[in-house]
Structures are given as structure tokens and as C-alpha cells.
Image (cartoon, rainbow, N blue to C red; front, side):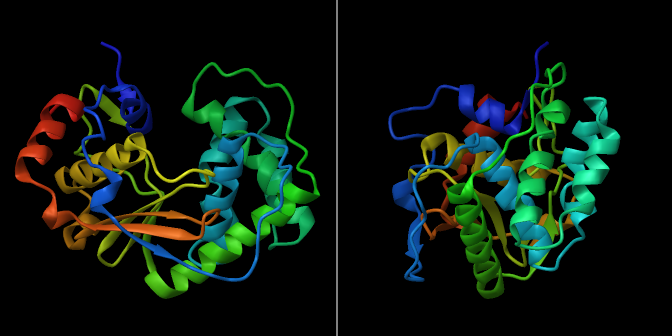
Length: 251
């Protein structure tokens, strides 16, 4: 039987019009810093997102670079580039250009861990616009975490909550009472994004992970749009929780 990761299941499952969990149910909070991102980024969106996520974990002071880029390092090993992975890791010191270039290159190895059988092509070479945007998005994330944090768990997993349908998946951040997913899209969150977030919440509550005991809210942070979407999970109907639990996750 084919099994899915959380993100893959959220992308492929059919949803009703508007989605299982419409974005309109969330409250949006927007921040202003007077800065605008530049046009002309030149690396894949997925790598941008991973680099922002991992660098935010490190720069915020919660984990070391090695802990933050753990999945990337495992991917480099699977790609037969373990030594290269450690070399790139050693060049990640902060938000200087060299660190950000190395972060993008190291994050590109994620796919080898998450998608077995991937074939190596070449490491990305971020241009000046990309580096500017990465630095600004990470800075926004650090400011966000200073207000909404501190982080209580990062890269969390949900052992005990996986099923025959959804057998893998790791989330971004937990704070004291909120589960956070980080997006760097130019567009507002989609129904796939809100379903993924809901799946993390349900699976976390089913898991053995005690960090979920205090989770009451679910939220999406997008540092590109400099906005947060937040929802009290207690307002989600029991019938929806049961439907997603049964038909999407497989409980």
C-alpha cells in the first residue's frame, strides 16, 4: 500500500470547495517594517522555504546549525555527498552572504532524504536579490519568534500518530500553545496549506509527543508576506476533526 508524507497527502487529497478548513476562519495579523523584498530570485521556491526555516531556527538561538540542518545533512549522506554537507555546514555562521549561500546549497540536499531515489544535479547559486530576500525573511522570522515565541520544539515528529496512509512528516515549530507552519509563498495560504496544518494538529494530538499537550492554536507564518494567520483549534468542529481523521489520515 502506498503511504504519504503529511505534505504529500495534503496536496493530493480531494477537498470540497473552499477546503476542509477555509482560510477565512483564521485571523490575519500583518506586520510593517518598511522594507520590500526584491524581484528576481533565482533558486527553487522549495529551497528558499527550507533555507528560511532552518536559518530561522538557528539565528533565533534555539538550536545549533547542525541540529537545524539535520535533514539536509542526512540528505547529503544519501546523495553520497556527506563530506560536502559538513563543509557547507561549517560555513554557516549568521546572516552574511557566505552563510546564506551555504544554507541554500545545503538545503538543496533535503530532497535526497525526503524523496528517496532523487538524482543529484547541481547546487544552487543564489543571486544578490535572493540573498537580500533570504536575509530579510529570516530577520522577520526572528522578530516574529521574539513576539510569539519562544520555540518549545522545532522539526517536531509525531510518533504514535502516523498511520498506514500517512507514515511520515515533520513540522516546523511549536511554541507554548501554538503549532506553526512556515510558508514563503508569494500568495496567501491555500486549502492545501490549511489542511496540512490541521493534519499536523490532529496527528500531534494522537502522538506520544507530550509537547502537543498544551497546543490550543494553529497558525501559519509567511515572512515574505510578513503576515500571520491564527486559529483557535477549539473552534474547529468535532465533525470536521473526525472526517479528516478518518478519510484523510486514516485513523
